[in-house]
Length: 157
Image 1: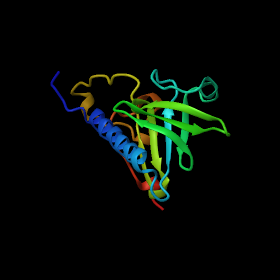
Image 2: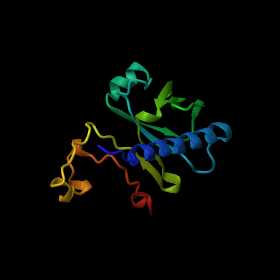
Image 3: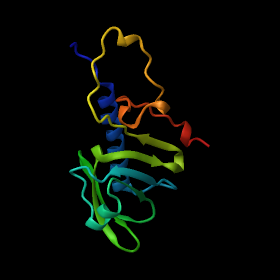
């Protein structure tokens, strides 16, 4: 098989780098203006760290909000850690960038979504190459495309 450019992984790496840069700025300077984040992540990721009661309550994914109160924000090359308030109970979380599914800042209508492909794509023959793939809305859950197209239309007013 010939070598090809893995645009999906390159885009994911760039998007995760963007999140790291944003979080570094927030760590150093605080959240500017009305900025705030909704971050959804996979709680089953092997490197995700959260309290047992949170993992039980959110067995597959969890959305956290970084807005009015957060503390101890630490940003590394592989993820971030932060203490958030859950009903007057501060809890420390560690979220690997690889576990992030969505990162949204609704104050400026910005969002990123990371889609993963469960299985390796099957190799296509020359006969299959002419078939058009199904539209993204019609694709079954486990046939998600590897490449991501980030559309900001859903965040525009």
